[in-house]
Amino acid sequence: MTLAAPSPTQPTRVDALSPLRFPGDLQLTPEQFWSVCSANPDAVLELDASGHLIHMTPTGGETGARNSTLLVLLGLAVRSSGLLLKLFDSSSGFRLPDGSVLSPDAALVRMERWDALTPAERRGFPPLCPDLVVELASPSDEGPRGLTALRRKMNSYQANGAQLGWLLIPHLQAVEIWPAAGESEPERIQAAVSLDAGPLFPGLQIELREIWSV
Image (tube, rainbow, N blue to C red; front, side):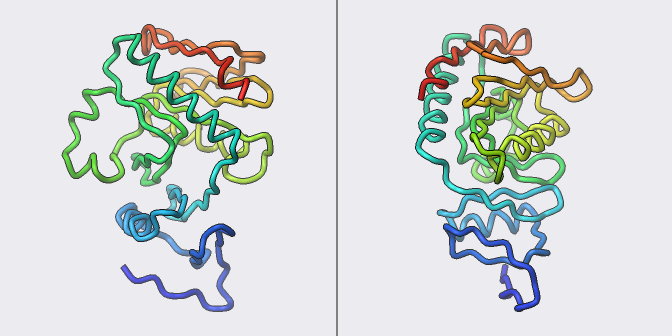
């Protein structure tokens, strides 16, 4: 794929930490997005359902440390529960049914769904929505990691088939629980100390103290 340089009159979306420059009206298919990501492995990008690029930024130290702690806790919880789940970190992109490609901070996919994919589908952006998604909000509401943007992402996961979503808000020590589409409105838990995935994922529990204390 060849991307023409934008003309001076075209709007441009620019990540200040990346030399990438694209026309503001550029629309990509998931296959073209894969090519862009492959050619720019250091760029942090997502694709919305309309085919427009979403420029992310690297996390700060606290968020990165919390994300690492979250993955460790989730991995231990999966092992302890005995559930057959595949764990993914924040660098994993998923091709959702609406055509978007999004990367949760952490995600779990039931093994039977993962095993049903072809080897090529596993190597690329897996064409499915994770069963459980987790996002970590930043203290600022600005940018793609702000609470407003992450709520839009949670809504996308929900609309595309996620069974459960956890939106963690560390600076408030709060969590929003996003159920499957059509079940109920998201529930906010203040001063949250633990998370239990309930009957959907029996025995899957994590304590939040280590994440809040970073």
